[in-house]
Image 1 (cartoon, rainbow, N blue to C red):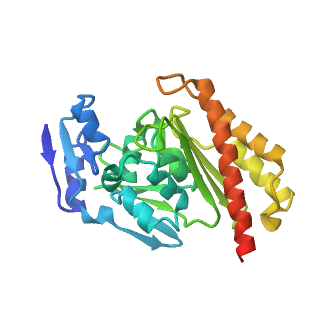
Image 2 (cartoon, rainbow, N blue to C red):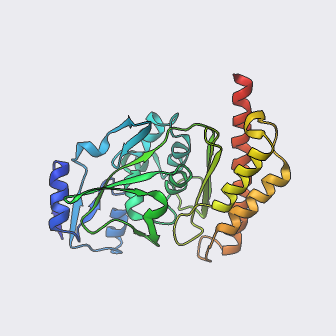
Length: 292
């Protein structure tokens, strides 16, 4: 196995162009497990830990550009206010040691349906910034996942960063597993309220071949909030609306039976998580008005 460790982003892109089969590694929290258990045996490994640009984030054009190498711990500490849903998901990733090493860029590259970062990225309409020696592409998150552990990157591309808007309203994340952290989720759900544009964002994982949005649920809830005037009044939610929202989220799933749970359980759990996160988020939204 060939091991490459570029010191600059330009060197990394040149190495990936020359060795498109090379497996990128940043935190290594997924890759090293697969190597240790001989699940993967790539011809080459491309270590990106020395590329300083990947560990940077900054506001840009009304959004946040977050480098693919920014760790989960830094997302919690530095981006908790601007991206609370993503920070909530980051808190459930592994142990402190894993959070210090693991990255959202690695989660995106692995494209596992169970990745904890995917639901909040979907709920917030993230955009993946991919680079190659040929140029730069911006890939909407909904177009990024192609199948089980398959993403839209070309063979010579690397993830440089992802873009998200700072939160304009409450965000929530919840997952179900045998424990809250240190486990692969049975299913997970993220919700973002966007009152500035009257929209609702969702994302869920471990309940379809790819991470996925519940678009019918989003449209239903946004329309109900607009028609009832609740975006402005922030009055309590109709229980029937909360129930229907949960049903629509469950209907968007396409789960399977596996060792972690049955398809039926995953659908039920998603409905429960959707109702809970909506209730929590709406309480936060109402509380903001009282505080103001």
